[in-house]
Length: 227
Image (cartoon, one colour):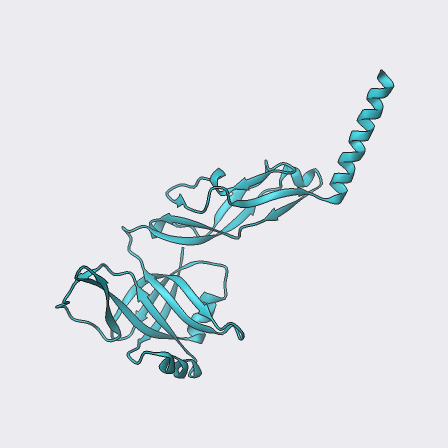
């Protein structure tokens, strides 16, 4: 995957009121997850923006609250592409991450909040990857129409093995047939979308259905003549 570089500022003022003030300034609240659980009580040092979230059984995780600018984040949010996001949180650390979730205002569609997940070269991650169809289906040449039902598939793998997109060849896809997630296999990654999920299909158009009916009528007529 391509790398997207992003700068952030640690955030210590939390809550709805503080978040609303930040958004008026063109800043977006964000959270970084992904570090290993730590024993409680925690005796290590917390950097600016860090806090402990209790998990139970005397364990917790360190998460980092920070902000990013809208101008800095918009090219990452408003794109079908996926990236490894290298975040430089000033006064805290630089982290290798992926975009995990984003929340939007129900009316204005403005970005309200973003979650990032820290990734490591030796730990598998789960993420959705865009699907790209390649080739010219047999069913399309027969008069059908190619329909893509899924634009992304969920996969699991090491971050260095995750491709920018999943390429699916449709050359052999016949009229009335479908390709399901369970039909697919890719090197070095595990596909975890439901196996019965339809990725694409070739559906008969009215013209194709009419031609098929016409051919059937002609075949019946030829058979009656030969009897």
